[in-house]
Length: 358
Image 1 (cartoon, rainbow, N blue to C red):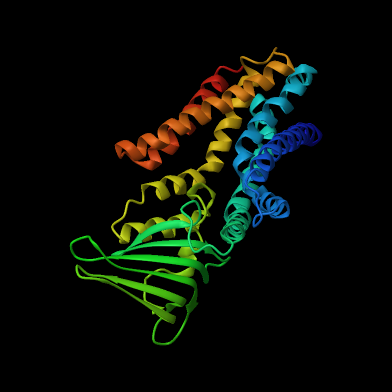
Image 2 (image 1 turned 180 degrees about the vertical axis):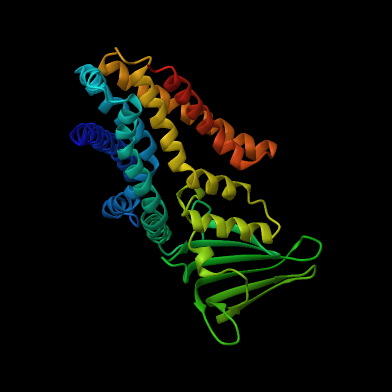
């Protein structure tokens, strides 16, 4: 039985490796083509290649559920096409034992995804985005296509680029609002450094130009440095330039709670948090559905049809997911419900077909 278990496990694992190699290669080609279109005198081809390399772990992480789905369908499909599953069952092996053997590679994918999505992909993604923002900024003071706008307290803040770790900033623009919600002052700093002291932590702005607005006049002053007291740590800033879907689970949770404490809408971050936290469950649900199809509707199908089925299932899952996510933001229902809905549909269909297996 151990040899049978190993044979099923290795076949499915090999199929998953082939699937991830193919789809990541295709994704890299399109990503590289898009990135090369952004090159200029500041952002060179070498910079674009470096960006693609650093964002590769994120791409792999996002494709893992569909890798597990395709690998399970193709791997078990090969065994079914060769009548090996029939022989294994005829030898007295219970179908659930076969299912468990096919699920073992999925458990590895789930664990690998958690490590990759929490500790490897987010810091490399942040490094890639920071380097890209600095390279594209050149000597420009500010660009609406770069950086990130945030509202903290009574200030609107734009940061061109954030260095890895979030302790150094480049191109910091601030607009301060008065009690009547009218801009009362603005400033631009070429850079900023995070300073830790016994009296309290703060940001030190360097080469600062400040303007004050009054009904009578506008006054402007220049400073070599200005201390900026704000409740915004480097840990929170380090995720500002990265899309919520590409941040770590812990970073999303911290940032969502920070937004809530500032009285801002944190639904986008909570949605991304639940999506990443439950990705292993989504992977498992997709694989259970794939395995149920092998023993049910796709038992006698050709390999080409199984590949087509894998693409169809992945596409339908993505469509439902992308319908529920904006709907939760628009209509205000729970982000957790939005994430669980497509997972629940896949799991329910998979268990339904598995119960019909003899």
